[in-house]
Structure formats: C-alpha cells, structure tokens
Amino acid sequence: MMSEGLLLLANGAIIRGKSIGVDGEAFGELVFTTSLSGYEETLSDPSYNGQIVLFTYTHIGNYGAWTGELESDRIWAEGVVVRDACYYPSNAKSRGRLSDLLKEYGIVGIEGVDTRALTVMIREHGTIPAVLVCGDVSSVEIEALRERLAGWRYEVDLVRETTCSKVELMGKGRKSVALLDCGVKLGIVRKLLEGNVTVIRFPAHTSAEEILSWDPDGIIVSNGPGDPAVLGYAIETVRKLMGKVPMMGVCLGHQLISLALGCRTYKMKFGHRGTNHPVKDLKTGQIHITLQNHGYAVDPRSLEGKGLKVRQVSLNDGTIEGLEHEDLNILSTQYHPEGRPGPSDGARIFDEFLVML
Image: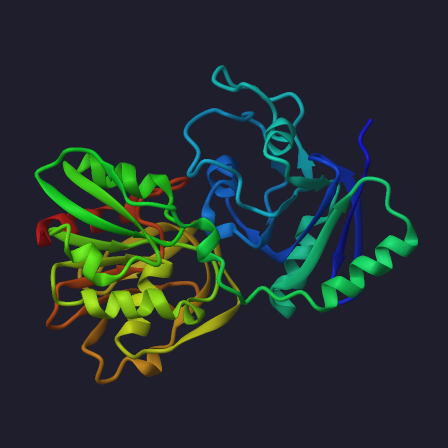
C-alpha cells in the first residue's frame, strides 16, 4: 500500500499525492521539465542536484527503468513529482519500474498531482523552494518542516558535491582533452570518446597549473548545478586556462567562461529544462531543437568589450545560447549538445571543437 506524500511550497501551498519512492523528506528548488521521455537521464543529471523535478508530461515511467546508461552513478534530483507513474511498463530492456529506480537510490517522489497547475504557478511566480515528504507525518511535523523551509537556501556551492574526487584518465585517442568536471553528464564524456580523444577528467577545484601540466590539446568546462557566480575557484581556473589551448564550455561551463571574461550572469524566472527548446545559430542560420537544463543565463548587456560575440540564441525568449570569442579559440553552448536525452541537433558543436584541436 502506497503511503501519502506531501509537497510543501514556500508560498504556503500544500499539495497532496501518493508516494512512489522511499519514505522521507527532501528540500529543493521546485523546477519543471517539458521532456516527454528520458526521465532516467534527467534524474541522473548532476545539474539537478538541489532540485525537485516536476515532469509536465502526464505519464512518466512507460518504458520502465534501467533501460540504458544513466548520466552519472546515481540519481541527483532531490525528489520527483509526476501526474501518473506507470506501474506496468512495456519494454524488453526494462529491469523494473520508475518507482523501483527511485527506491533503489533512496529518492522521494509523489504522483497524483496536478502538474500542469503547478507548472503554471512556477511560470507565473518563478521557481519555488519546496520540501517533499512521504510517509506518516503529523501536523506538528508539517509545521516544523515549513519553518525549516523558510530558512532553506538554494544558492550555495553545489558543484563540490557533484564533481569527481580525483583525476581520471579515459580512452586512448589521437588528442587529449582536459575536462573540468563541475558535475559532468557521462553523455558528454561518451561523445568525446567517440571523437577519438583521450579524456582527462579533473575535479572542479583543480588549479590551472595542474591541468596544464598534463599538456592537453583542449579544455572542456562541463555542465553542473547551481549559481555560477559562487564558484570563484572555478572561475579563476578558467581565467588562467584561457588562451593556452582551445576551450569549450557546456551549460554551467558556458556561464563560467563568461564570468571569467568579466561578464555577468543572472537567475532566470523559471529557467529552461526539457528536450524541445529551439535555438537559432546566427552564424549558419540553422535552427536546432536542443536539450536544456539551466536556471541561470549570461547577461547580454555585459558582453561589450569582452571579446565575445553571440553565436546562438533561444527562439523562445531570446536569451543567449552560444558564444564565440573573437580572438581566442573559445566557444560555448548554454544547451546540452550531447543530446542525452533528447535530440542530437546540437552535437555538431563537438565537431567544431575537435577541429579546433
């Protein structure tokens, strides 16, 4: 028998549902993703550290769980909110249900929620701090959780939790790429390995001097969770690496490159998350459908005099989706070009980077 689940929002709302994960509690920033599928990749993306993920699509779990490779070694989302969780998946590759996946990794989740109404609330008022609690909870405990929620803050250094703990060497390719791991998705690593390169994965707090001592042919600054402006150590490392070898940034890496060049970032109202975001490449005129997961963006008003030019823009809201440096071999994308999950339209940016090597 399923236990009850409660979603308590910082604006005072209480949403009731049924538990589909473990009993317990999880604090996080409530965000929504518009992906219709790819829930395994989404939940295992380290960029969701510190967030409770709400799926706008009504049926989640249709093709089961453990159907392919996850994007990390665990589920990073703090909690999961869905309208309906499928308990009878149809997929020969599946080894279980979505609920089994959540229980395996100790994640709380609820179903039976009007996710569309919650999405409208987030779009109107912005992302909302929340606590998701499942199991037997008294009214006194609910009040205690609401008091804790009032003091909860998302804007902290979440990268230190998601980065690797030591230098890792992967593959044996013609060229070598230093990967500054801020919470990298393994899909990015796999894409690089397909390009016949050796990947040297470094913890986010590694100094520029140590990275350069490995004599890499190029550098990638990865995706990751949270506010880029609090990552002073990573910004300084990126600044010292610029101009040494070709550099590419993905999502958080794109923001860190911009900050290292003196630009500004800002928190978006509700961010971009999902597999169906259209992006226009101003250089080629092509439009790509992209995978995105970010709550911060680069302020276009801060680009002047920094040597950066806008390469790609969002067709939904005009925000910056890609940058190039006028003099240095630097390019970046705000979206996830590896396409895990989602369309692979943006993968050609990896080809450009490999040519730069």
